[in-house]
Length: 84
Image (cartoon, rainbow, N blue to C red):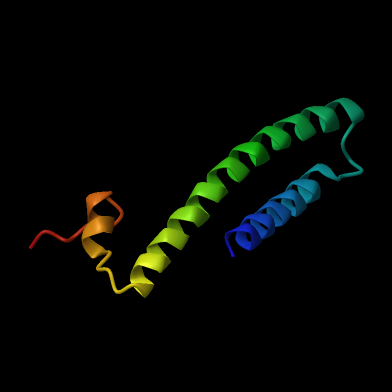
């Protein structure tokens, strides 16, 4: 399942990057610079997507095993409890 989410994320990121770089109005120099920038950004986003999917997977597995994940999420700072 993890591979499916990773591949789907990569395909979605690649499609979005391609849509940004294809434009008949750009000159070749500007187009090349834009491609390099988008390539860099997509690599960063892809590098972030895999750990996020992995973390979500681990949390879901813990929930399926009836583990209370509230304290775990609060401990890593994902849940901010309102101060009353």
